[in-house]
Image 1 (cartoon, rainbow, N blue to C red):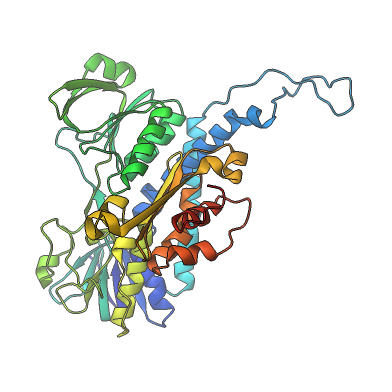
Image 2: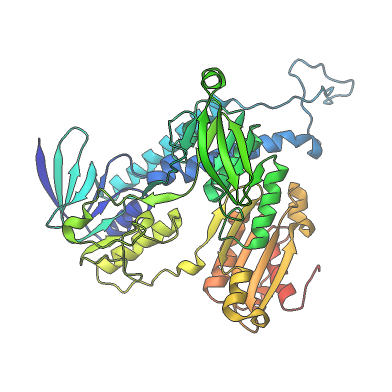
Length: 497
């Protein structure tokens, strides 16, 4: 078994968002960086998460646009149709029904991921970051041992610090063990070989509602089961309820307060069309038998900490299995070893991991990094309509500060000119602020909510007062006017209300 040694300033275990962001931050400070990655840089986000999911959701949006084209005055004409009697006026034929070419959709996803992966690899290489293939494990001295698939071993010793960024894996349910065909995890759902006729999605977090959205829009019969009382726990209650109605409008059957008891695979149906029957019990005791030819388990993710060798060097873990870190510097219980991303118990979001990578590097080089305020990080869910939020919900603010200490305004997209032009008038923006105090939360469900959140996020984190937000001019006609409208309404000067 071959082995060699590499010395560097910072060694990073894992090349996902937290790991590669840390590598880029460190390289730009002139530090020598080695990233140990067992698969491909980019992590779950690029290969099995954010990017593939948004590709499928955008494909669903294109399909939706084509289907409603006639409402904009767009007609479809067969290529062989003769022209009309007037010059340039074609004779319009009957409308054509768009269909989904699943193999082409998946192929485009793979091409997109490949292109982004190559771009990221080139970026890291041009920054002088060394990528070492292998599974990274800490040894007794705190060095990182990279075990490659070919049996070779490389030992990476860091002079300044080690950053652990090994990410996470899908959580599983005893009642629904993945088999790669009938039952798949959130990692595998983006590579299914055929568009299923019927789907059961277990778990109504961001992954579950996104998968339910695009599969329903592609024509699958979707049932979404959630153990908790609402979909998208953590969102404002009004937003969650609005999303549940939107899912129902797409044809998704949403069943909350329900748990999966087991799965029965029926041999004849499995051979013919891959069906199984999932037994589900509602909180009131009612039992349901849900038949589906694809079951997607989307019940969250668990930190990939078990194979890191943490016990060898004494790195402490939380009861949840996450690595325990100092919240300001992200240093573990062992000096010189840091952890970021899904490995620690912070919001499991790629953009949070990006920020944590920067914090860890700044701490390693002796700076005083500004700690991340995890209560205010931005969340985006790419359903139809989209959901985006940051800061405190209305209920949380009233619990923390009292009913009379919180002021709230809501503006619907129905009155927004750009939303009317787009034909996407569902949804609202809710602004939560303290009485005679700053904005503490922004919650959106509506068209392009993910792109509208940034000014709300800045307002929340800068603790801007609604009066200050209301004073700024919003361009017209834009969707972003809705934030200004909400702020003006909150200070008693609504423009269109």
